[in-house]
Length: 455
Image 1 (cartoon, rainbow, N blue to C red):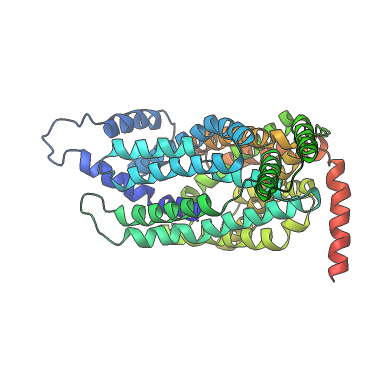
Image 2 (cartoon, rainbow, N blue to C red):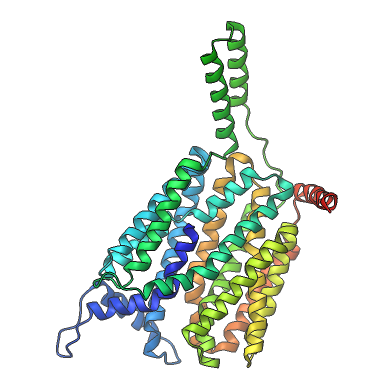
């Protein structure tokens, strides 16, 4: 539900930013230039745009601003993710998730009342610093699943997010057409988003148990001791024995994980992959407009197709694959899509490339999350997954700016060829650098055997 409401805003960025620009810029041609925060930001973006050899149409000003805000949001998540992960390792997944949800509520509340760009920017800053749903859902998945079905659990989580990205933007666009507050025409979409997040937070508060193994075990032990004491059926010897057992459990620590792949390599693959993949994602609407004169509606259908195919693959195929195989298939599909995008001249070619991108979306990040969890002990998974996400968000934050710069400097063919070269480097790291964790092999074989028994 939070991820569904999170996607409401994605298709609204152009209209949102146009609204703030029109509201804060003077309409009178003889009026002095506006000195608002938005005017200053647009001034810097126009100076950046003027540096390109190829002229960039003024209609892209809002898109550039949206890209800058998207990069800011991702980089803020890169800063916050390790802290959120360590918080979940120390105080529990439930506490960390509720804290993240509180930040999300504040962020959307600011959007509801954002009648100026300054308040809207504050909303995005708070949202970027508090967005931890994805990494905490992944950490919870590692807590409640054993090694043999961890990849399957990760894939199902990915499928849920893909479904949210398939339907959330369309719902957000529809809600934005319903005007309820004159000063903020997007208040309806923001209000529904706020309602969904508050509802989910209340549900999590009353229904979500702690899943961090060490805290969950301690809670169970404490509950058992309290129950026995209430019954009054315990002798002094039994109390002493239980105290010894409890002390022994607290002193014991999870066995250190057997490292197969260094976390640095996993983090590097994640960052490099998202650097090029996110750049491609951001540039895709420009390419479809230039080549096929696509409208927003047609771009929405294209993105919806990618999300739908990705969710089907995650629910039916990815969850049956070993994590490393999943990553390799996704990187290979991504490379093929980049090569196609550099050369296509037809809509059928575009949708063929989109199918490859959907395969990539369904496999790579899910597989990397699973691999990272295999390389971490129980008491450090939150932190390790947070660092993995942080590196990925650095790539996601820098990718759009770097990739579109190449696109405007040198053209589509060069941009996507450079992207293909970058993904080829990721492929080399994936195929020749990463190895399959032994635990993944053993438990994957057990999972296959279980599937055959069910049949």
